[in-house]
Every structure is written in C-alpha cells, then in structure tokens.
Amino acid sequence: MADSTPQRPVFRNIHITDIASYRLPPAGIVSILHRVSGAMMFLLLPLIIWFFDTSVTSEVSYEEFTAAFSSGIGFVPGVLVKLVALGLIWAYLHHFIAGVRHLWMDATHSVTKQHGHSSALVTLVSSVLLTLALGAKLFGLF
Image 1 (cartoon, one colour):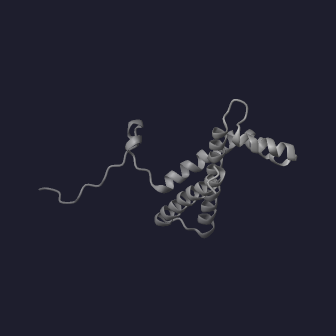
Image 2 (image 1 turned 60 degrees about the vertical axis):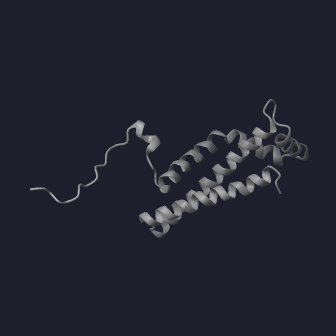
Image 3 (image 1 turned 180 degrees about the vertical axis):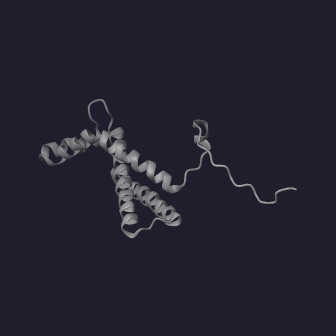
C-alpha cells in the first residue's frame, strides 16, 4: 500500500558550500546589514570624529575638511575619501532606518512574517535611495 500523503520538506543546517546558493529573506538581509553597518561605523569612528572636528573647529580647519574631498588626505586621493564618506552615509542611514523599523515592530507588536518582509523591503529601498541622493550631492551632481 502506497502512502499518498506528500512528503514534508526536510530542513537541515546550511553547510558552508550552500551559502552562495541560499536565498535569504529580506528581513535576514536587513538584519545582517544592520550588523555590518554598525560595525562599519564603529571601526571608522576615528575618521568620523576627525571629520566632525575639522569641520567645526575654525574656518581654516573647515577649508582643510573640504579640501580633503577634492585633493585627498596625505597619499589617499579625494575620490577615495568621497567613497569612504559615501559608505559611512549608507551605514548611518541603513542603521538608523533599520533601528526605527525594529522600534516600530516592538512598539506595535507587528511581528508577522508579511509585515517583516514588507518593512524590510522599505528599509532596503529607502536606505539605498537616500544614499544615492546624498551621494549625488557629495559627488557634485547637483
């Protein structure tokens, strides 16, 4: 006698060789990027402090700050300084928006799978769009 019930899927741990083919849901991507952006901001904190300090200390230091984006800092070209600043812009925006997402989900008890999926997509899209807008300003497109 054959069993006519469909076989249930078997869930197993992901092996390191499966990582490239594994499809992570948007909420998982946001979670990982939230950690990456936090680590990035922490590791680049000395640069962030230097940016802030030179931009507000005096008019002369502000000129030094703005010159870093055009002529560079020491042997580091200005384009690379702009790319690092753009990375920091993305890290801050993504970390902030993902943090607000978590606070919203905690405050409203919105913990359904569908709400997690849609809010993760909003987080990803809004952080990228805001980064593109500020990046366009940083690179002088407007």
